[in-house]
Amino acid sequence: MSPLFERLCQRTLPDLVDRQFRNVGQWWFKEHELDVLGLAGNEAVAGECKFTSHPVSEGILADLERTASEVQWAGRPADGELLYVLFSRSGYTDDLENVADIRDDVRLFELSDLMAIETTA
Image 1 (cartoon, rainbow, N blue to C red):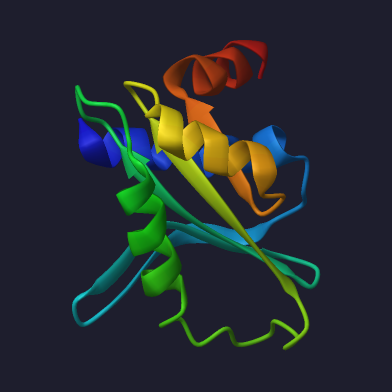
Image 2: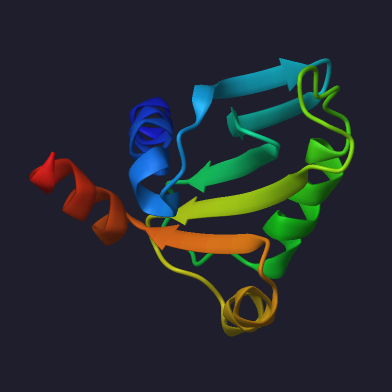
């Protein structure tokens, strides 16, 4: 089910964050992997999709930030913004929700957000 969830996350991303992303997909190099990666103007997005029965914690965001730092962003200006997106089947821990509330570069989406986009498309 996880690969299907990842594709759903990639497909609904432009509607969820209201950007015209190009080339949204996966990225991997050696031991590094991102479930979602895309460019929109001078902004890049990097994301993780977790289809687990446990809420996603702040540690997953930290892992995402470390992995995104490994990407060689061809075509993205050095001063461009990086947006982190997390997708979860089972919600988020309070600590991660608090981080997302105070940071402009972190967005959290649940399965219900994805389904709302899919049913209106």
